[in-house]
Length: 332
Image (tube, rainbow, N blue to C red):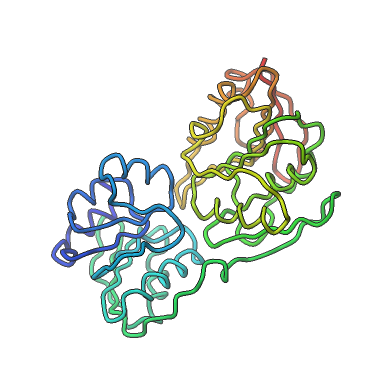
Protein backbone atom coordinates (compact mmCIF):
# COMPACT_ATOMS: atom_id res chain seq x y z
CA UNK A 1 0.00 0.00 0.00
CA UNK A 2 1.28 3.45 -0.92
CA UNK A 3 2.19 5.42 2.25
CA UNK A 4 -0.10 8.26 1.17
CA UNK A 5 -3.00 5.80 1.03
CA UNK A 6 -2.05 4.50 4.45
CA UNK A 7 -2.33 8.03 5.84
CA UNK A 8 -5.82 8.37 4.35
CA UNK A 9 -6.92 5.10 5.87
CA UNK A 10 -5.82 6.33 9.31
CA UNK A 11 -8.66 8.89 8.90
CA UNK A 12 -11.03 6.57 7.05
CA UNK A 13 -14.16 8.01 8.73
CA UNK A 14 -13.62 11.23 6.76
CA UNK A 15 -13.96 9.46 3.43
CA UNK A 16 -17.28 7.61 3.57
CA UNK A 17 -19.32 9.51 0.98
CA UNK A 18 -18.92 9.83 -2.76
CA UNK A 19 -15.21 10.63 -2.95
CA UNK A 20 -12.95 11.66 -5.83
CA UNK A 21 -9.35 10.44 -5.62
CA UNK A 22 -7.33 12.63 -7.99
CA UNK A 23 -3.93 11.27 -9.01
CA UNK A 24 -4.37 8.14 -6.92
CA UNK A 25 -1.71 5.41 -6.83
CA UNK A 26 -2.33 1.97 -8.31
CA UNK A 27 -2.78 0.20 -4.99
CA UNK A 28 -5.75 -1.21 -3.04
CA UNK A 29 -7.19 2.14 -1.93
CA UNK A 30 -10.29 1.83 -4.13
CA UNK A 31 -10.88 -1.57 -2.57
CA UNK A 32 -10.79 -0.04 0.91
CA UNK A 33 -13.02 2.91 -0.05
CA UNK A 34 -15.97 1.36 -1.92
CA UNK A 35 -17.70 4.69 -2.67
CA UNK A 36 -14.59 6.33 -4.09
CA UNK A 37 -13.85 7.02 -7.75
CA UNK A 38 -10.43 7.70 -9.26
CA UNK A 39 -9.08 10.31 -11.65
CA UNK A 40 -5.79 9.18 -13.16
CA UNK A 41 -3.44 10.65 -15.79
CA UNK A 42 -0.70 7.98 -15.71
CA UNK A 43 -1.46 5.26 -18.28
CA UNK A 44 0.33 2.53 -16.34
CA UNK A 45 -1.53 3.28 -13.14
CA UNK A 46 -4.82 3.52 -15.02
CA UNK A 47 -4.30 0.11 -16.63
CA UNK A 48 -3.60 -1.47 -13.25
CA UNK A 49 -6.63 0.21 -11.66
CA UNK A 50 -8.91 -0.76 -14.54
CA UNK A 51 -7.83 -4.37 -14.26
CA UNK A 52 -8.58 -4.53 -10.53
CA UNK A 53 -11.47 -2.03 -10.24
CA UNK A 54 -13.09 -1.93 -13.65
CA UNK A 55 -14.99 1.27 -14.38
CA UNK A 56 -13.95 3.02 -11.17
CA UNK A 57 -11.24 5.30 -12.50
CA UNK A 58 -11.33 8.02 -15.17
CA UNK A 59 -8.27 8.59 -17.37
CA UNK A 60 -7.59 12.00 -18.85
CA UNK A 61 -6.75 15.65 -18.25
CA UNK A 62 -10.21 16.83 -17.14
CA UNK A 63 -12.04 16.21 -13.88
CA UNK A 64 -14.69 13.46 -14.23
CA UNK A 65 -18.19 14.66 -15.06
CA UNK A 66 -19.99 13.35 -12.00
CA UNK A 67 -20.99 14.57 -8.55
CA UNK A 68 -18.78 14.13 -5.49
CA UNK A 69 -19.19 14.92 -1.80
CA UNK A 70 -15.46 15.53 -1.35
CA UNK A 71 -12.12 15.00 -3.04
CA UNK A 72 -8.58 13.97 -2.18
CA UNK A 73 -5.77 15.31 -4.36
CA UNK A 74 -2.55 13.29 -4.30
CA UNK A 75 0.17 15.92 -4.62
CA UNK A 76 1.34 16.03 -8.27
CA UNK A 77 4.99 16.37 -9.27
CA UNK A 78 4.83 20.05 -10.24
CA UNK A 79 3.37 23.20 -8.72
CA UNK A 80 1.70 24.17 -12.01
CA UNK A 81 -0.10 20.84 -12.21
CA UNK A 82 -1.08 21.05 -8.54
CA UNK A 83 -2.65 24.47 -9.21
CA UNK A 84 -4.64 23.10 -12.14
CA UNK A 85 -5.88 19.98 -10.31
CA UNK A 86 -6.83 21.87 -7.14
CA UNK A 87 -8.65 24.53 -9.15
CA UNK A 88 -10.55 21.93 -11.19
CA UNK A 89 -11.59 20.05 -8.05
CA UNK A 90 -12.43 23.07 -5.85
CA UNK A 91 -14.55 24.61 -8.63
CA UNK A 92 -16.85 21.60 -8.34
CA UNK A 93 -16.99 21.40 -4.53
CA UNK A 94 -18.28 24.72 -3.15
CA UNK A 95 -18.88 24.35 0.59
CA UNK A 96 -17.41 20.86 0.63
CA UNK A 97 -14.10 19.32 1.62
CA UNK A 98 -10.90 19.09 -0.42
CA UNK A 99 -7.98 17.13 1.00
CA UNK A 100 -4.35 17.24 -0.11
CA UNK A 101 -1.97 14.39 0.69
CA UNK A 102 1.68 13.96 -0.20
CA UNK A 103 5.12 12.94 0.91
CA UNK A 104 7.22 15.40 2.88
CA UNK A 105 10.09 15.11 0.43
CA UNK A 106 7.69 15.99 -2.40
CA UNK A 107 7.02 19.35 -0.74
CA UNK A 108 3.61 18.78 0.81
CA UNK A 109 4.25 21.38 3.54
CA UNK A 110 4.77 24.15 0.98
CA UNK A 111 2.06 22.84 -1.35
CA UNK A 112 -0.52 23.09 1.44
CA UNK A 113 -0.31 26.88 1.06
CA UNK A 114 -1.93 26.47 -2.36
CA UNK A 115 -5.15 25.67 -0.46
CA UNK A 116 -5.29 29.19 1.06
CA UNK A 117 -7.25 30.67 -1.84
CA UNK A 118 -10.17 28.30 -1.16
CA UNK A 119 -10.43 28.68 2.63
CA UNK A 120 -8.45 28.05 5.79
CA UNK A 121 -6.42 24.83 5.47
CA UNK A 122 -5.49 22.67 8.44
CA UNK A 123 -3.17 19.73 8.85
CA UNK A 124 -5.03 16.58 9.85
CA UNK A 125 -2.24 14.03 10.07
CA UNK A 126 1.47 13.48 9.69
CA UNK A 127 2.64 9.88 9.35
CA UNK A 128 4.51 7.52 7.02
CA UNK A 129 6.69 10.52 6.02
CA UNK A 130 3.52 12.09 4.59
CA UNK A 131 1.05 14.80 5.55
CA UNK A 132 -2.71 15.12 5.08
CA UNK A 133 -4.29 18.57 4.78
CA UNK A 134 -7.94 19.62 4.55
CA UNK A 135 -9.81 22.75 3.49
CA UNK A 136 -13.52 23.55 3.32
CA UNK A 137 -14.09 25.33 0.00
CA UNK A 138 -15.51 28.66 1.19
CA UNK A 139 -14.27 30.49 -1.94
CA UNK A 140 -15.06 28.27 -4.90
CA UNK A 141 -12.99 29.40 -7.91
CA UNK A 142 -14.02 29.61 -11.52
CA UNK A 143 -12.72 26.53 -13.31
CA UNK A 144 -9.77 27.38 -15.56
CA UNK A 145 -9.55 25.70 -18.93
CA UNK A 146 -6.42 23.62 -19.29
CA UNK A 147 -5.42 25.32 -22.53
CA UNK A 148 -5.52 28.74 -20.82
CA UNK A 149 -2.64 27.52 -18.63
CA UNK A 150 -0.47 26.40 -21.55
CA UNK A 151 2.92 27.96 -22.13
CA UNK A 152 4.03 28.52 -25.73
CA UNK A 153 7.50 28.98 -27.15
CA UNK A 154 9.05 28.84 -30.62
CA UNK A 155 12.08 26.98 -31.89
CA UNK A 156 13.99 28.42 -34.87
CA UNK A 157 14.43 25.33 -37.03
CA UNK A 158 15.85 25.09 -40.56
CA UNK A 159 12.39 24.31 -41.93
CA UNK A 160 10.92 27.36 -40.17
CA UNK A 161 9.83 28.20 -36.62
CA UNK A 162 8.19 25.38 -34.66
CA UNK A 163 5.60 26.40 -32.08
CA UNK A 164 5.59 24.23 -28.95
CA UNK A 165 2.55 24.11 -26.63
CA UNK A 166 3.37 22.94 -23.13
CA UNK A 167 0.73 22.07 -20.50
CA UNK A 168 1.18 21.99 -16.71
CA UNK A 169 2.98 18.91 -15.45
CA UNK A 170 4.70 18.12 -18.74
CA UNK A 171 8.45 17.54 -18.74
CA UNK A 172 10.47 20.76 -19.17
CA UNK A 173 7.26 22.81 -19.03
CA UNK A 174 7.54 26.00 -21.07
CA UNK A 175 11.11 25.57 -22.25
CA UNK A 176 13.33 23.34 -24.38
CA UNK A 177 15.51 21.03 -22.31
CA UNK A 178 19.20 20.61 -23.14
CA UNK A 179 18.92 16.96 -24.19
CA UNK A 180 16.19 17.63 -26.73
CA UNK A 181 18.09 20.66 -28.00
CA UNK A 182 21.12 18.47 -28.75
CA UNK A 183 19.00 15.81 -30.43
CA UNK A 184 17.25 18.41 -32.59
CA UNK A 185 20.66 19.29 -34.01
CA UNK A 186 21.24 15.67 -35.07
CA UNK A 187 18.10 14.54 -36.88
CA UNK A 188 19.94 14.00 -40.15
CA UNK A 189 19.69 10.78 -42.18
CA UNK A 190 16.86 9.19 -40.23
CA UNK A 191 15.46 6.08 -41.93
CA UNK A 192 12.33 6.61 -44.01
CA UNK A 193 9.11 4.96 -42.90
CA UNK A 194 7.41 4.76 -39.49
CA UNK A 195 9.06 6.75 -36.67
CA UNK A 196 8.21 6.63 -32.97
CA UNK A 197 8.86 9.56 -30.62
CA UNK A 198 9.09 7.64 -27.34
CA UNK A 199 8.35 9.68 -24.20
CA UNK A 200 7.16 12.54 -26.39
CA UNK A 201 6.42 15.14 -23.70
CA UNK A 202 5.18 18.28 -25.45
CA UNK A 203 5.83 16.70 -28.86
CA UNK A 204 8.99 18.63 -29.75
CA UNK A 205 10.89 15.80 -31.44
CA UNK A 206 7.91 14.19 -33.14
CA UNK A 207 6.71 17.51 -34.55
CA UNK A 208 10.21 18.48 -35.70
CA UNK A 209 10.66 15.16 -37.50
CA UNK A 210 7.23 15.39 -39.14
CA UNK A 211 8.11 18.91 -40.30
CA UNK A 212 11.47 17.83 -41.73
CA UNK A 213 10.37 14.46 -43.14
CA UNK A 214 6.67 14.92 -44.02
CA UNK A 215 6.56 11.61 -45.91
CA UNK A 216 7.35 9.68 -42.72
CA UNK A 217 4.58 8.18 -40.61
CA UNK A 218 5.11 9.54 -37.09
CA UNK A 219 3.72 8.20 -33.81
CA UNK A 220 4.17 9.99 -30.49
CA UNK A 221 3.89 7.97 -27.27
CA UNK A 222 3.88 9.01 -23.60
CA UNK A 223 2.65 7.51 -20.34
CA UNK A 224 1.18 10.85 -19.25
CA UNK A 225 -2.20 12.18 -20.44
CA UNK A 226 -1.03 15.79 -20.10
CA UNK A 227 1.98 15.06 -22.32
CA UNK A 228 -0.26 13.48 -24.95
CA UNK A 229 -2.59 16.48 -24.83
CA UNK A 230 0.42 18.82 -25.20
CA UNK A 231 1.69 16.87 -28.19
CA UNK A 232 -1.67 17.11 -29.92
CA UNK A 233 -1.71 20.88 -29.35
CA UNK A 234 1.86 21.23 -30.66
CA UNK A 235 1.04 19.27 -33.80
CA UNK A 236 -2.14 21.27 -34.42
CA UNK A 237 -0.34 24.61 -33.87
CA UNK A 238 2.05 23.72 -36.68
CA UNK A 239 -0.48 22.21 -39.07
CA UNK A 240 1.01 18.73 -38.68
CA UNK A 241 -0.70 15.35 -38.51
CA UNK A 242 0.64 12.42 -36.50
CA UNK A 243 -0.67 9.68 -34.23
CA UNK A 244 -0.51 10.37 -30.48
CA UNK A 245 -0.81 7.46 -28.05
CA UNK A 246 -0.82 7.05 -24.28
CA UNK A 247 0.63 3.85 -22.89
CA UNK A 248 2.96 2.48 -20.26
CA UNK A 249 6.31 2.27 -21.99
CA UNK A 250 7.58 0.60 -25.15
CA UNK A 251 5.11 -2.30 -24.77
CA UNK A 252 2.40 0.13 -25.90
CA UNK A 253 4.29 1.08 -29.08
CA UNK A 254 3.51 -0.12 -32.62
CA UNK A 255 5.54 -2.89 -34.22
CA UNK A 256 7.56 -2.76 -37.46
CA UNK A 257 9.07 0.66 -36.78
CA UNK A 258 11.86 2.09 -38.90
CA UNK A 259 13.07 4.48 -36.21
CA UNK A 260 12.71 4.99 -32.48
CA UNK A 261 13.70 8.51 -31.46
CA UNK A 262 13.76 9.43 -27.79
CA UNK A 263 14.84 11.74 -25.02
CA UNK A 264 13.70 9.16 -22.47
CA UNK A 265 12.73 9.99 -18.90
CA UNK A 266 14.57 8.70 -15.87
CA UNK A 267 12.69 10.48 -13.12
CA UNK A 268 9.21 9.90 -11.75
CA UNK A 269 8.36 12.80 -9.44
CA UNK A 270 11.04 12.93 -6.75
CA UNK A 271 11.89 9.26 -7.29
CA UNK A 272 14.67 8.24 -9.68
CA UNK A 273 13.32 5.64 -12.09
CA UNK A 274 15.26 4.07 -14.95
CA UNK A 275 12.78 1.29 -15.69
CA UNK A 276 10.97 2.83 -18.68
CA UNK A 277 14.25 3.60 -20.47
CA UNK A 278 15.93 0.31 -19.67
CA UNK A 279 12.81 -1.55 -20.80
CA UNK A 280 12.93 0.46 -24.04
CA UNK A 281 16.55 -0.56 -24.64
CA UNK A 282 15.83 -4.23 -23.94
CA UNK A 283 12.78 -4.37 -26.22
CA UNK A 284 13.59 -1.88 -29.00
CA UNK A 285 14.67 -4.68 -31.33
CA UNK A 286 11.25 -6.30 -30.99
CA UNK A 287 9.57 -3.12 -32.29
CA UNK A 288 12.09 -2.23 -35.01
CA UNK A 289 12.26 -3.67 -38.48
CA UNK A 290 15.53 -5.27 -39.54
CA UNK A 291 17.92 -2.37 -40.12
CA UNK A 292 15.71 -0.05 -38.07
CA UNK A 293 17.45 2.57 -35.95
CA UNK A 294 17.31 3.58 -32.31
CA UNK A 295 18.54 7.13 -31.72
CA UNK A 296 18.32 8.59 -28.24
CA UNK A 297 19.84 11.28 -26.09
CA UNK A 298 20.74 10.72 -22.44
CA UNK A 299 22.81 12.24 -19.67
CA UNK A 300 26.43 11.28 -20.25
CA UNK A 301 26.70 9.60 -16.84
CA UNK A 302 23.99 7.07 -17.67
CA UNK A 303 25.62 3.81 -18.87
CA UNK A 304 23.17 2.90 -21.61
CA UNK A 305 25.63 1.86 -24.32
CA UNK A 306 26.33 -1.67 -22.97
CA UNK A 307 22.59 -2.31 -22.62
CA UNK A 308 21.95 -1.15 -26.18
CA UNK A 309 24.72 -3.35 -27.55
CA UNK A 310 23.50 -6.37 -25.57
CA UNK A 311 19.94 -6.18 -26.85
CA UNK A 312 20.09 -4.34 -30.19
CA UNK A 313 23.53 -4.26 -31.79
CA UNK A 314 26.67 -2.12 -32.15
CA UNK A 315 26.13 1.31 -30.64
CA UNK A 316 27.89 4.51 -31.71
CA UNK A 317 28.02 7.91 -30.04
CA UNK A 318 26.72 10.28 -32.71
CA UNK A 319 27.29 13.48 -30.76
CA UNK A 320 28.12 14.73 -27.30
CA UNK A 321 27.79 18.05 -25.53
CA UNK A 322 26.43 19.98 -22.55
CA UNK A 323 26.42 16.85 -20.37
CA UNK A 324 24.47 14.74 -22.88
CA UNK A 325 25.30 12.02 -25.38
CA UNK A 326 23.41 10.82 -28.46
CA UNK A 327 23.46 7.06 -29.02
CA UNK A 328 22.76 5.48 -32.41
CA UNK A 329 22.25 1.77 -33.08
CA UNK A 330 20.58 -0.34 -35.74
CA UNK A 331 18.83 -3.65 -35.42
CA UNK A 332 21.13 -6.22 -37.02
